[in-house]
Image 1 (cartoon, rainbow, N blue to C red):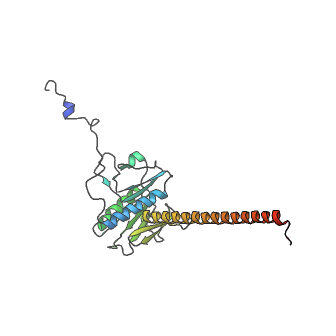
Image 2 (cartoon, one colour):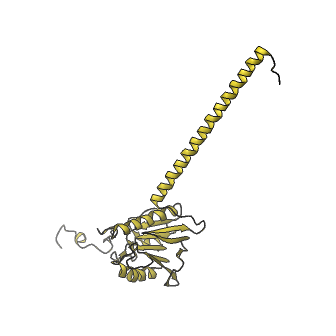
Image 3 (tube, rainbow, N blue to C red):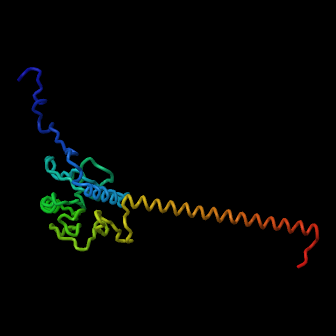
Length: 246
């Protein structure tokens, strides 16, 4: 042994070796603008819908499913995990969180078709992901653009009613986006642009209501002033001429 040389610094023991789980790989988030917009919109809508609940919604972040093997990973476009603390993560390790994603959405394309319908479908099925949805915003290989699978036992079966029973939402294709509707009220979960427009309309309605209220107040004030003027005039007549005849 060379004097003064710490051999463990060169050959660390297994206990000293830290396994790194990267949070990025330098690859683009989505294949096209349509896929990116569909991803970001679904992510934001579901985050708002589940706000305040013991759940998190993550987008295009590594899902590590085998401890000690950082190459065994996948990056779902959107994944919903229940029974975990809310908030973002740099990546998601199943063995640390103690929960498998409940619902996963993939924005699929002709280029990712084989991976999405074979490898990922099999992987999510084996992991126990209860719902797996494929959305093809360009309609390149999914004719109806949206299809889903629900776990029955240990096997995926096609979803035929466009319902996410776990999210308690009905899903609909709306051009190049997924529309989400609450099952209890039928209310649509607004996407950011719709939310901004609804807020604008609500602001305009409130301003119009305030303007009407101000006009009514001014009209009532004018009527009060006219009444007081007439009463004052009548009082002067009475002082000058006495009681007026009926």
